[in-house]
Image (cartoon, rainbow, N blue to C red; front, side, top):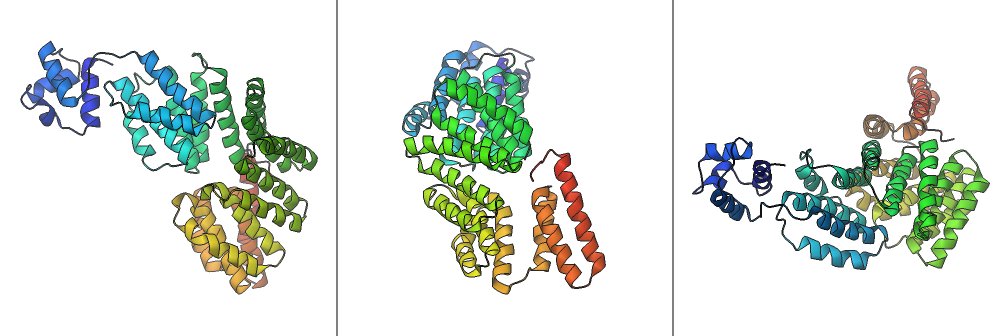
Length: 422
């Protein structure tokens, strides 16, 4: 990045026009030539421009800067939030004085916000500010930029975008040296996202690679995370024994560290096994234990369990309990734009519990279009046949046939995108 590009970068970051920056220092056309690399300003003009931008134009030690930020990320990776907060405050309190420092500052501030608070507000703007700096976004910076982009997409439930961003980060590992824990964490993120996309073979492959690294580095909590993914994949192919085995191994780790959140995730997945085996009462007990264990986590971390519990209450014909659970959480879900899909699920069951029948107008005008727009074939494969059955009972066979056909197409689309959920 030449001198003019650095000046243009910080002028835009500080929201200054060329006229505001050039005032009293040089002419606007001359500043434009500087920014475009056409001319090299005198040392005196350089100093004046740097002073107005409150930066220094000489290069800092990028390797040292990167080490400090990676050290912060290592604390986040280890879930040592106390240490991470201290390191973050030290780094963030230092004003950005160079382009490289400003880029690293924004990337790692984004990562910090997401990994400590699962917070995405403001992250998109931070990453957009550095996204166009192609000629300096290389190596480790590019690795962490794409990792941050992937995390943002993941927390925003845009799993396809997250998966692609994580793969771009993986490409940076081909020609650059990274520590084993950095590789392990990225492989885990790819596995996690592949799991959300129901790409079971990819999820399995990447999880095994990540698990090998975590076991080698004795990071047992991350090992438990990997075993949970393995359990989910085995559950999808109805290998209940292997799925249970992986969850019990993870539970041993969770109990050793008295990790309530991890226990909650394990109980949820044990509940899923019970659901698929038709053991509804056992499933309800496990989902309830999961919610209790996850009492202090974010809504996004427990909404799946709430939804699963609601469905079990519907199966066991307990509408009062189902309504009570929905009424407890619906307002919070409605206020969270990232959980709009779950809001629609809960509204569907609220009508079912309240009136004993589906609200076809709501399903056709709101629920179905939302999942169609997002190509969420998993849910459409459930909801299309429900409408088909409804119209069949109403002797509206043309509409019934349409929704049954759409249900079949949804199943085909699931398999085309690699979904092998049974």
